[in-house]
Each structure stands twice: as structure tokens, then as C-alpha cells.
Amino acid sequence: MIIKPQIKNPTTKLISWILIGAMLCLSFSSSSQKKITLPAGTEVVVELVQAIDSKTALKDTKIIYRVKYNVTIDGKVVIPAGSEAYGKIINCSKAAALGKPGYLEINVEEVKAKDGTIIPLSSVNIAKEGKSNKGLAIGLAVGGFFVLTIWSAFFLLIKGKNVKIESQTKITANVLYDTEINVE
Image (cartoon, rainbow, N blue to C red; front, side, top):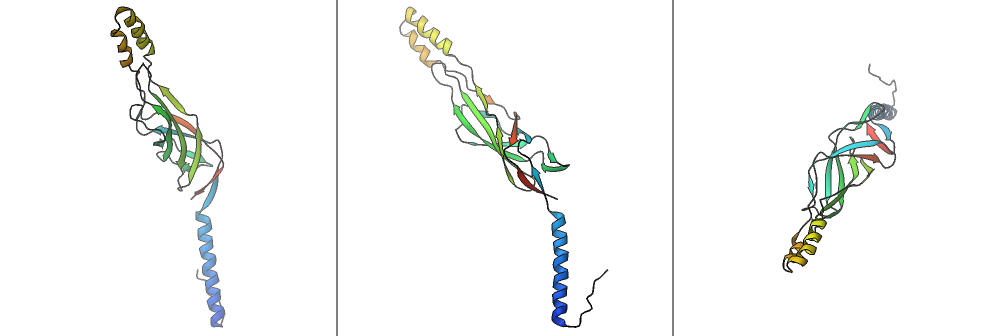
């Protein structure tokens, strides 16, 4: 049905058409964008995309995760499975002499919602330490001292083991604070 104003004044007629057009535009735009609040504490399960090794890791390096499961609010998906999430390497060290093991500590900091909104997350840091060989190094040092002084220097060459956090390692993070997400 076409609405045709019955106005004879051309200026008033033009204004009427503009108002009708504006009302139609507003009715379409308000129905397509709805905001949903993603509450603080909502769980987001992510998986590490690429393995991280203490041998090559650098502190503060950005880490990429993928969301494992859809996050829904009121039946609407606000964070789809497969969305990118980001974190960083909090602390790391390579395996070293005297049996010192490698160490890695990572976290999850944010995720991108379906509408592109960046949502801050908090997570328990995941920390892993390699195998220590300090006992072996000390044993060689003490035993070598009694057997042969040169032998005791080999304890300096004994390294600990590096550690690796495998890809697809799951971490559960939580939304840090209430965040509004646009949904269709």
C-alpha cells in the first residue's frame, strides 16, 4: 500500500514525504540492531592455536587462541566457536646449566565477539616447568670431586629440560565485566 499525502502546498508536500521516509528508515534500522549484555563471569573456553616451547618463547609475545564452543545469551550466539582470542606469554625461560628446567607461563586476555567488539577476559595463568636435572648435576659435582677434579666440572654442562605447551591446550577464561554486544 502506498501512502500518498493529500496536501496541495508543494513545500508541505515535500516535508511530508521526507518525514515518511525518515520514519521508514528508523523502523528498519531499529529492528535490525539489538544489544545484548554479556555478563561478567561468563565462561569462554579457548584452545591454543600453536604450540609454545620454552626454548624459543619470548616474554610478552602475543598468543592466538580459538574459541572452542559457541557462547550464547538468550539463544543468540554472541561469540561463535572459532573466533579468535588473544593472550600473551607472561614469563618464560630456557633450560639452563646446572640442571635448571625451562619454564612457561601464559594467559588469555581478550576475545572478539560476533559484532567485532573486543571483550576483556581474565583467566588463571597456565604455568609449566620442564624436568629439573639439578640432582644429577649436584651428584656429578660431588662424585666427581672425590673421583677426579676434572670430572666434577661436567656438572656445569648438565641442562634441565625445556617445556612445551601443546596446541589445542584448553583454557577456560571469564568475561571481565558486563559488555554490550550487537546482535541481529
